[in-house]
Amino acid sequence: MQPKIRVLIADDHAILRNGLRWMIAAQPDMEVVGEANDFSTAVALAASTKPDVMTLDLTMPGGTGLGAISRILAGRPAIRIVVLTMHDDPAYCRTALAAGASGYLVKSAADAELITAIRTVHRGRLFVDMHSTSEAAVAPSVGKGSEPNPRLATLSAREREVMVMVAEGHTNQAIADRLLLSVKTVESYRARLMEKLGLANRAELTRFAMDVGLIGQSSSAEDQRDR
Image (cartoon, rainbow, N blue to C red; front, side):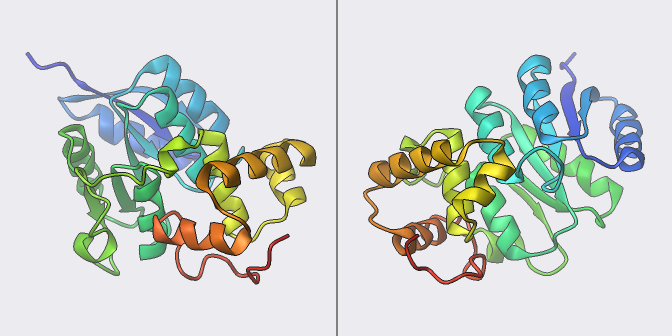
């Protein structure tokens, strides 16, 4: 008898979480091993419960969705993450997949699609289901088997998180407030990641983040002056 797929649920809406737990637990080949209602708990439970697949909302308290994906995979690279979100937007999808997610599913999709997504990513395949576009249009170059950017691979999970927020136009103070760090610590992360990537200023950093798919072309609302 095959072992059941161990699933961890991360969403800050209790009603949705309860529904997901009931639906997943009803599958003969799945079991729910934990639930999280914020990113910090999600990262901790991913390490302690050792799930095979994790459903992850991109918008929860305690950090950012991209940062959580990076930290989860840094601790347990074998976890398959299915992003379950309200954002029916190709840019969000590309960003999540580039950060390491294996699946992307809009919350308005049919329940059966989530079950299919869990089974698909558990087999090591990419799963994308959106209303606005197709998988081919969303992620032609970030499926399983594509090679990660070697420079991006040199960054720690926290450095990658800071890099994305800088590229999105956040100030050092805003990043410090979001990640519960000091401004000096953020400045140190920023300087170190710029050195690792061989970049000179914010404009080059933003272009790099766009090129590797971590942010969309319209993600940085501010100008690209170096700060």
